[in-house]
Length: 572
Ligand code: MYA
Image (cartoon, rainbow, N blue to C red; front, side, top):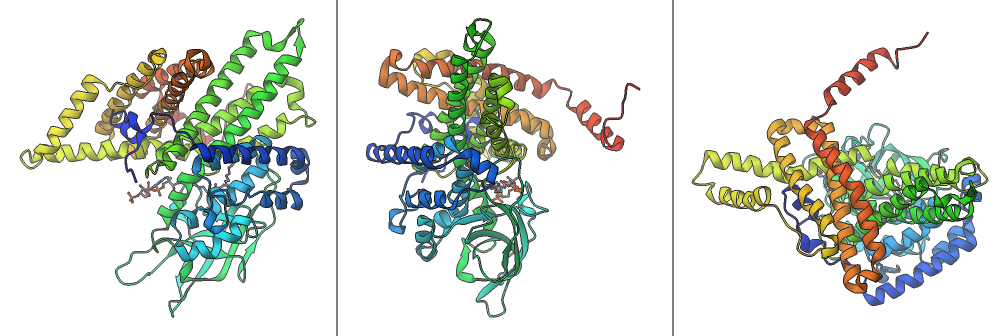
């Protein structure tokens, strides 16, 4: 297991190229299996999944779910030994991408079951828990859900209040509380539930514990919520009234459940990103069909510059998203242990790219885009949730920035301490000084990018140096108060997001050139160049904005409006 992380390196000004070059690929035999699986999923979705009816009736027909189960779509990543297909993270994502390219409600149902519902058992469960639960979850005989969010604990996941008390005889816990907005709540049989545990034995601190909870006495689910989109998926409240959970159903260590929740979400967020790839590709197909068919001013609308600008941007963003998603699943498949920043970046970038792509596609469709008779408005409604669930993009930006700055922050604190004790701290100071010479004064160079993309490689190198410099400046300036500086966090996170996207494009495009020559890889090169030119503008704006901004004014304006209870002006 490798402990290093590409993104954490960038925050130090170091580019761990070996983690992202060469671009990862599925092993030959798995690739063949996945191709077959994707093909059968496509046929099934085309023949049986009627998104319009699912959206209008607010449910996925029973027979459709049953057929999905028989195709193995409920047990994609569960090992074959437990009755699943045993797919890798990359293969799983590719199949989820296919499902989402047809229907988001279906993708969310499958994703809630596999990306997060059963993931804690898969990642952290004991052999006995796996043997007991995975076979029925693999066939879909049982459906899973992930129950973390509560009325008072959304982004602030550690604030949950559902309680689990250990029974006097120590044989089971008694669970009380409620969870809201639980996907698959209506029909799940097995829930991964996070609850606050009090005394867990001598010397143990109270904390959060993860449990496997089966539907049964004391567990009740509410009616399906009426939602803006993904209407065919089930979203309910789940109530626990004195639910008895055997001690064997604790996942991981008691009191360490927050880490379990985060581990599941780090992994699960990639399924969402893959879903966004699938939906974006469908939208691009629809948009380009429209460009070729719709005529105005004696031309197809695709001939107009403003439409071409949109299409080029959509292709480039989708390429970047696809590249970063499969780069990250490749890291997981290569047993890299730490990918929390990378997966949060894929979630944020994926959901925002899709939101932009769906909006632009609807705009290209214009009048018909707004009509219920066509798929655009449904796809727009369906896409909106991705910016909210599995961690809002706001909290994930804070996470990306603060978690990325943690390493440099710790190092600066240690360096400060070493300066006070120069003899003891000599080794640390020497290492720090050596890296400074190599990075901030010198600058890390990429050695593996194809020369055709050297301009884009320099963009990445320059901005890695900017990122590291800015991180150090802001940490020196704000110290611990950096946790309160969300404007700074947002810009740091946005720089990090663009840098990861760029690195993923460069790695994939380089591999394509090496394999197929410049002729064969032209799309890779062009999409990378378009993406880089958009990223260049954003990066410059974010770097400049870190020192030159009106953040304080904006905060004051917002604060005063709270006293006004809204917009206080009128022309009357
Ligand atoms: S499920 C619900 C989703 N909810 C969330 O995502 C909650 C968001 N909140 C958080 O993630 C946390 O509360 C944050 C931290 C990040 C804000 N990996 O003091 P701390 C460690 C590893 O910073 P807090 C849903 O929506 C940290 O290092 N470790 O924590 C389903 C520290 O460790 P240590 C992490 O300020 C929808 C400790 O934790 C991570 O309280 C259905 C405490 O840290 C991490 N990430 O909060 C979806 N974060 O003590 C279906 C923190 O050792 C999807 N730590 O230093 C299907 C999609 C498919 C289709 C799509 C269609 C297009």
